[in-house]
Length: 614
Ligand code: GCU
Image (cartoon, rainbow, N blue to C red; front, side, top):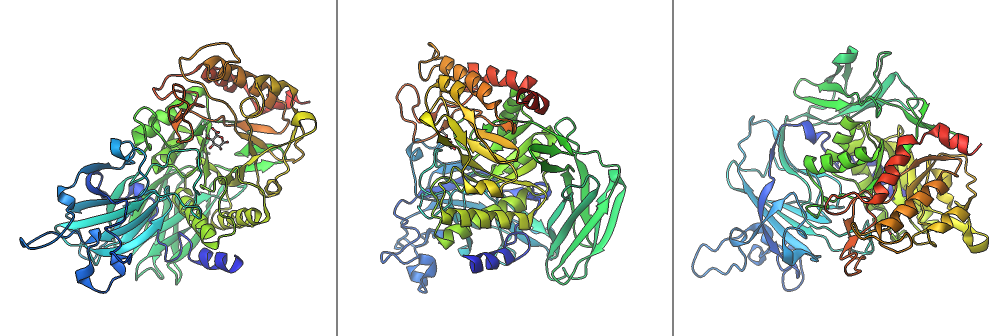
């Protein structure tokens, strides 16, 4: 396991062969969003020949029936048994499950095809195709040439197409396979819908022969004045290049020169930084220039740290008034992907009184992070190491590390992101500990400015398990001690909350990263009738009283903002494929428990928790 990690870290995202273009968001791009032709291929007939050999590995071109060649019958005698242009079309971005009735439950391969022209603005430029995400595995081909394979349903990837691109009639073919597999990340069992497809934006980006491929610009850990980071160039002239870093409003203009790897580290200081915070989400224009390239970003500067049981934002204790969010637009149904979706979800969080969100259980689309930066909402981001991962499998670890690297590479310049979460509700074992400890080490190697956490579980002791503690050994490796608990829903009824004694020994800040229960909006009854709004309301009232008795409590993120799709939730008339723990229904209606949580956030503070537990 150890040797594997070293090799991966050397070639991890951001400074090796796994180029991931930083800040595609602000690059000039041409979009490939819109209608793509698609072919459903459950037997992967377009990928394997009848001997189950991949077409793209066969030497004999006549054998090449691979759909990625986008063949056309040109003679009446020709035999071609597929035709993208005569096939149905589907919208990109967007999962296929909610766009086509027949694909609601589909798990398998679907081929996408998009034709496009591209006339380069400058002959010396390089051209890339960039995907915001594809769930779960994407095999990508341009004009019949294989560009690469990406695994992981929630992180970006890109391929250089400079030498394959034509001015007219390019055809981009993507084989997307969302089949769940035991050794993948996540594994086969999740409590969310396995939305398949090209679920985020697809763009063509043209860049100079030597361009700014990556950079990191953030306050140094525990500093309020020192801005540190690096700039990475990509291209044959990356060595010894002059680079200028400008932050005009801070009157910062730093001239630096890249080393033989095209990389240069820097630090600049300013006593006049207007620190980013929920009350003051100040973003600065940051410009990075070389002789051949220039990129603009909008970056906030803030410090996040812990001191004993406190979480300090810019040196001051803060209570994280949070909510968990799945990446789903419940009203439309299916994966959320647009800035409008983000405005709706984060708007509801703000209405709830949140200054913080837990983006569960995987990296969400970049619109969410950019908007959180602007709105002043702190963010917990999570790698999809969920439940029963194949801890012993080295390839599984490599996939988990690759996805974590892509997440950190994409979002490391977003002030809103304060916590990298390694996992959710994973069973304790030696191999799981090695897996998570190595992920933590990898994350800190890429970014030591943020807090590390993971959603753990509590363990009961004593009569009926009324004394709750954290005995998970990973608790010693996190900065913030987070756990999910469902007392009153999975563990007894809401009146059990009052009997709980907290015995959390760790001298660390505690976030209760999940709690709550289900209710069907509009279904009313007494407070012990399961699935009524009254039961959920009662459960939230009792939970809040119980959680405030945790002396180290510094944040809560109830499960969950809105009802969301899950194949595990099949109770007719109540669930019908929806997990009903949302505080908001799939129609956008607030349930009674929403207002219990809103009242709590309107008055809670660190001082109040300390006073309650004196
Ligand atoms: C778990 C898990 C969630 C799940 C929730 C539930 O804690 O983390 O992904 O949806 O509980 O049971 O609804």
